[in-house]
Length: 211
Length: 211
DNA sequence: ATGATTTAATAGGGATCACTATTTTAATGA
DNA sequence: TCATTAAAATAGTGATCCCTATTAAATCAT
Image (tube, rainbow over all chains, first blue to last red; front, side):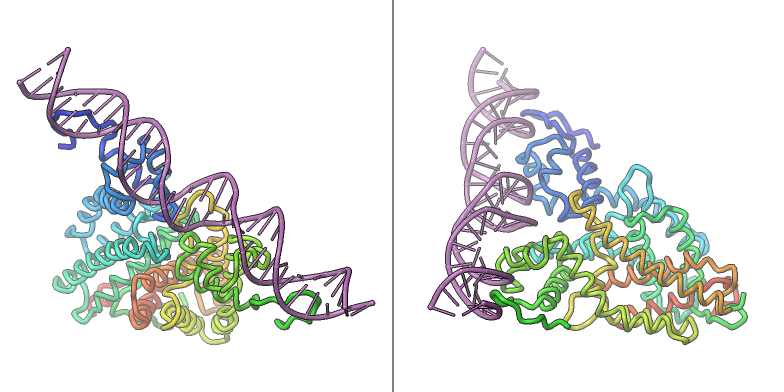
């Protein structure tokens, strides 16, 4: 599949997916504005014209590198979230998986998407719109799962699923930021455990607060 | 205080605080790496040597602009958090104030500190450490307030105040990220209302979930 | 082997980066 | 008045930014 059919002409020296993997890692660690095309070509072991003929432009490469990086996580996380486990359990495993992704030993800290290109030069507005759209998609996926939970009676009928999704989206973004700042896996999971106690239809009582 | 004593020599054309205000706004909107010294000098109406004689370097200016921007909010927010209101009420008002700051009409979106310099080029590592330290300070302030609440019997004695502080820190960072992506004030406040239902010593029950 | 085809490498372009040596201007003090 | 002082303006620095016109190299089909 990845192996292209032998054609005429000089063979490619760099596999496309290898290049995307290298780019994804650099962009993940340094961000879009913090990664130069010279960084990218050097890490890939190619010259600038090769980068442009393979990927089009820095922005186009970033888009492809994001797709490549996301594809690796999507399948597993989607299975977790869409499973038939009780919604709180599915959500818990989903968030734990994200916490693991934020704190992998030999990978950059945090999430490649959650905290990317939040501030940016005017000329990079289109890149920021791209990452914002990816984050919105992720929130809508959560919302859709909560909507299903409402339909299946796991959540109250009047649940504000949009806000609930944005709340857990905020948790995901906050975890990424804290991982960038050095938080460890255990800290993020303790944080998740608190977040999972937030649930619609619940009200605090004096009894709860005193224990 | 701000008005300097008349001295010999050519008078300053730009007030220091006016310059810091302009710099804070630019850095807030575009981030450290997304703001060039040319952007800064143009916005301030000065030439490069004036910027460097007044502020030292781009990094030093960023530090001063952050201090300047933070000082404007600190007093009011500290009063709210340290007030004698019940802890949940104080926390609620504190978070609402942050949500307001994230969505001011004529200001950049989000928080100047919460989501700044999370990804960065290697050469800007010291700038990233600076913003990370500011975020850690903010979390420790929350923790200290929760510790006080434990002492005063408002929270259970065995409360993990560090994790609770990091949880609300994550909410603050997530709100900033979502504000950058276009979230409105009301959305952030609904999100806060969910976050405030998370509280130690509480466990979900089937009864709670079915309503 | 030769030509066609496809990719890689060389070399550099124009713009912008953070920053500064030098000169000029505008105030005060004597 | 006129030297002294302090800040502003001029006019750049070398480095790096993203990107490309051109040339060289490596393969396949004949």
